[in-house]
Length: 459
Image (cartoon, rainbow, N blue to C red):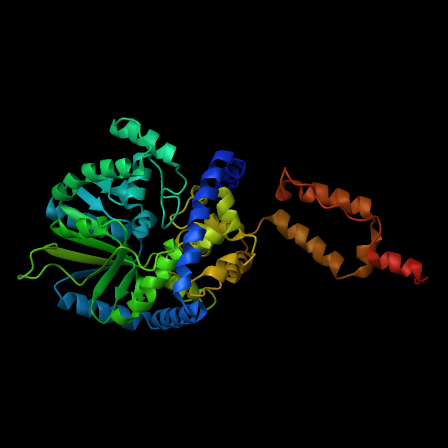
């Protein structure tokens, strides 16, 4: 089954899943309340967004310069940088490190890039124990699922769902007490930090001027994952670059406010390399793997380049009426929702994933909440145009629009057939495209043009 067919089938199921809708509406409602309160810290939020947009745009426009500056400074600090053109190359480089260290287990803090390249499946296939340490990621890993949301991976789970999952998988007494469930996960994860030979993290930002990575989190698991194991591997998309450490005073609060409604997240770390001789904590060796995987293709297209400004806050997902109806798993992609629909076709196979750009009402809610002012809904239109330009539309669709164009360009042709024939044409051509649960629009027996001419005796 094609990706498009799977998407349509899953969307149909999720859209009418009342339990799913109840859980998501509850969690989204709490998010929206927190965000509205969090944004009150800004005297001029729009100005902050303009500044963030400008800084990210300048960084992306000068990506080569800043990436080389980051590499030089990070290497100077004792770290090692590996450049990976695609997922296959990234996985091969990671496996070399695992073989070199004779590693058997790894602890991971939250990283969407690892989901993008299929890291967990790759390592598990090669006999490595992979433990997700972010609570949300840990929950979906126990459930055998993928993250539902780029910020809150278990957003689709209710307290009851998690309680049942922990009872089944961890063999504990049933409890819906959030504190007890969290403590259970914490107790089980503590030993994993001590046993793992390698810790893997992502990075919210790359800092060119200090050669460091910036990680923002709320649980402290990223600090443990990057400190206890002797080797730390950071997987980072090349677009995460910021020119200066000073930019964090704008981006850290903006990310937190847009993502969770906090003024700033609980833990914010800047890591510039392995531990120094005078330091007691930290890994003995640190790698940053800079991953392209289609990003330079986006960079090469001036119309779509601004999508690389994304800071992965998740605001557009939470604002999107389509995402809130069909959920994150339906997209079958590491990046879901509006921004995922923009970038996924370029990071994976465009023909297979072009349908994602059509999974939008184009209402513009995503654009209105983006903290770096990405014009998301228009980028979705650009993707649709790209699909047409590449000839990736169905022959039936081409025929239908050619007939529509012919009629619309000729008033006599448009008036030639009455409403009955037009309704029959709509019923045959658009029955499945319009959907089984929606009524097709009814065309009036006579057009306004015909009625006007009849009223005024015009031929």
